[in-house]
Length: 622
Image (cartoon, rainbow, N blue to C red; front, side, top):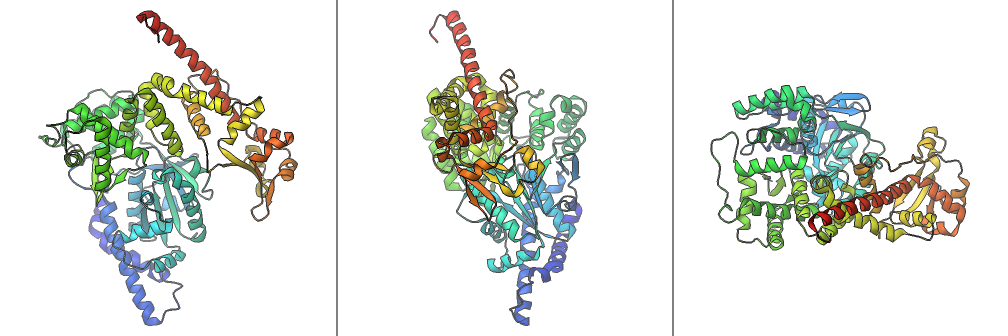
């Protein structure tokens, strides 16, 4: 496929556009014959120009290994599989995926290759000469207040698409598009709810097109876009991991030794690293320097950065001098990079223009009190020498956001205890939707679990307990639930569905928008981190079945058009029967709260014992 794309892409794009041009301009019959002919010509040229420009952008790539040049996508791409239930989908041909449904969501962890897969799907759609692909990087919506349709048009317009937006929107009725919405998880949390609504509206209005959306796992998305079929990107198996490394243009001797290790023991011993394309690339990068691959992710990233810092390019026999090396030692460089990463992460920035990047570096100087270097030189080093960032047009991007998360975790752990508590609290309040999809908190816990518990988790669990404590258990549970939800509702339209009754899907909880505390989000996350460690803390199965509707009917407000009855949480304490009903449906969330309170007691006792031992051994008051 690589060879065909290289030789025939211009011809293929022309054929693709001409095949679809009549359908793209249908509905414009108000124009006269000559006007319509001119509009068809203009539309065709606009799409040919876009596709020609886009294939140069998405058909080639810079990677963490190919740092001095762009490389054709198919020189290093290995087809990835997708999984839905027990079904495995081969993505080498995009038709295998889009024939399943018009609406697809692709989930995958960081570094597993979602964006690279989307580049392949874009190129493969062109080669199939059926649908016109549009590649949309959703993170563009973080930079300004634009709608999804404006973002799609801007994605075209930025790549030499010269057609008025009105005509483009009219063409969406043709059903001739595959719209690739890449990176929902890169949208800042306070814009996600609005974006989900816009995705639903877009796919409802123009439902003849095909849509594929990518994201790390997101409950908001998972529960929002219901018409989508959800697929998970399957990690590399041993055969694909070997094929990926074999295709790379890398130091011949090092690569062959690494392939031998990968075949004989590395894949088995380090499956979680080897099955992730980004981490596998980093393993090759670090293999020459560190013969052993560490078990912990944070040590692995630390080693990878050390190699990036010390080497310019593993395929060359020289090392470029850092511009900042005369002023900054390695540890100081890492401190600046960590502060810069944390500042940008807290602002949900993974892409920056030059002034914004300079601002983050200048603020990092103030935070660290290290200012004996040029911000311009620092940018040159992280882009040209270390290649942790790359320049795409006028925007700087992290080679992968996992590096930003790693250095953010390092920064937080180096703060004094009080500031560490405040920053993690702010992180949860501001980035609550990213708790499970991002790795910052995971890395903090992996690096310093004991410190995390003592400095943050125990005080935070106490804060939750004290904030919601009531005169009895019922009131306590109610107070806890009011920190997250504003109402709960019954969906009449699926009441006759036995599956919905058994799973409780006919009852849903609506989140607060204002004055919300993210206690529930934190406890959901903490359960996943601690349930196996402290398995003696009971997690009873929630009772989601529903036997009565008369209580909600009596106290709720009916929306006849939507078939919903909504009960405002504020009225619940006034009626004992309604309180019991609400708490019965909230059993899952109550279970999370109870786990958190049991965990608090367990951790307090554990740390008391540790402090007593330290006090006795060192003769100090701990």
